[in-house]
Length: 318
Image 1: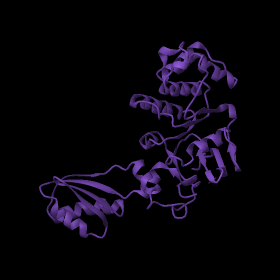
Image 2: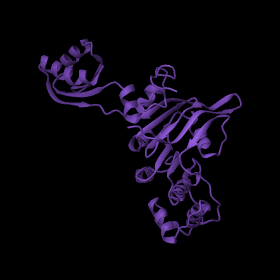
Image 3: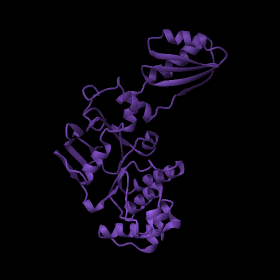
């Protein structure tokens, strides 16, 4: 079933002199999704989010929002607030600016959710960068947004703070659409169901996270044996359905195959043929970082050869 996008762009271009911030980008963010925007430094992630929020103007192209602007929440990569305001006043003012009211209890609740329960009345001029980022999350949450745009929301946080932010994103996703940019790919994989990959201002993949993993990573298994792995390694290395077979030592092999079915059927059959004493055969868990490197590296698929259009449901190239 096709889900209508809450946000989409067509041919979005933003240039900085001779350089392209984003170039012909077609983004579609499905309503109710968590959309992760990833890419190398300088790929255009912050520029794209700035265009979507109106903080930057495109040179050409269009942006279509299926939600009123006052129902869009934003957490920039480096949030700033007036230094003389207290944390509570920042959150309360955020609600007022979009035409809502907030009670002291609601403000306290929002600050508690981001780990700032004990600084409600403290002026924000002395906040660390991590505390300021948490405050920005609370200020966005209090407005009950239908669409939340987050630019590197956990970049200044320690592991505990990152976990809290990911929990908040998961909570948001139950009632809103979330779009976040991040260079921490494990975080994106944990919370996002849809991903867009930017490289040099171009959207080279857009679609489900799992499709990206399936398309750009070879099926791989970790095999543990009792005794020598050499007979099984030799047999697998000669099989035409095996891409690589690496001996990891101490009776362990990492085996990559052409297809999932090849691995599921062939490894067991090969082990039986050489009378190998198998302790375990488990899939080597695919992660977004490996798929990202496969897609964006020198040997990765580029805009001309990645497959389906980037704004298609199953991913592809811009």
